[in-house]
Figure (cartoon, rainbow, N blue to C red):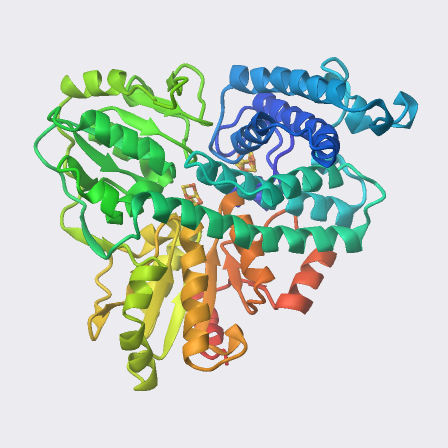
Length: 542
Ligand code: SF4
Ligand code: SF3
């Protein structure tokens, strides 16, 4: 195996035996093969699209399978094997439908078009096997951005929102990573286009979430516990939460969120459930300890799952694209419903959660809520009460170096406001940072995809201040990344022309020195260093 897709990759180079995340070498190799099969499917599906023969089931398959290869999503060997099998079958069906003139003679086809279930096992299909360092780097960066795009597109898709241009770009990007005629310049173009399409993807998901569940409202979220048994739900899939709340209503079972599901507490559609009890615990990497104490069943709807301890393994359920060998998986039925009865029945026999924290934290400042107090914010900036906004969005992770983000938040001057989204917030959202004239010093827009809200807020502020360039705002970016959704968010920020981003805790391992040079020359990206150094730089921008 070789995997370097996340920030915690071994020695900031690559995992080669088993993943730091717990992914087995065998599963990593299968995921590489699955990715290659998706490229083969995409090769033919782009032709099917051109001929008007594309079917939605293919889009769905590509999204779901691609998502399954994202960090901390699917560790299940059999599930990946079955996707590989399905992929080949689908590829052959698409191929069979195409008019003969659209398919070259077998000898003229590239390897990705002719790969078979037998040959894929012996071919070196890992994107990392590309020889040229810069081509490899760009192919990897594009692949990781596309993984994030597939994941977010999947989230929008389950709510009935789709965009053909995004599906097509994912396929085009996948195929491009196999094409030796696509050189450095063209790959840079594709990486930037991935960012542009990333903005459309985030906008689509924002529309899907807010049109379906309402605009998040500023909400004080309970982080303590009640005295009834509960079900804990983690990941990003709001539709799963909706079904779980519907099915648990009136049963005496409470529902708590974990990790990236926290922002769901601010949606009007969910707040109406009296058994929606609040948020339990922190970011994904603390799940071992926190799941143990929760006492009741836990549903993992998307990333991030980590290998469960025996002590609570029988209480973990996966659904959707998530998989882990030996855990119960809840499948969607024909009618689109997932039956959560096994969790509800187990919850009835469980003890209430053990209290690990108490009090409340405030969330729900997505763009509509934040902009409803725009006048107040603009006034605070004009009168000097707010000197600067610090965007600290992204992911949290288990490495102790991430204490940097807590220290950075603590060290920020009292007239600065943190804008956050994603699970990165858990490094500082329980600190008592106070407020500035009623504006909280941590404005939480929601999940990592709600970084889109932060962009909308920045754009509106730029308009209000009559600035043409978003970089002229008193806004600095200190972004934390871990997995590939964050890679897409980063590319989306770059595509909007946002410069001077500080990125940490380390730069992506796939970035070669020359690719880094391009990023520095065009966007002035820099890796984070120490709290003191970065503070000096970030507070003194423009
Ligand atoms: Fe290593 Fe990250 Fe890949 Fe897991 S996802 S194998 S930790 S690089
Ligand atoms: Fe967190 Fe996994 Fe990235 Fe959605 S839950 S931000 S790491």
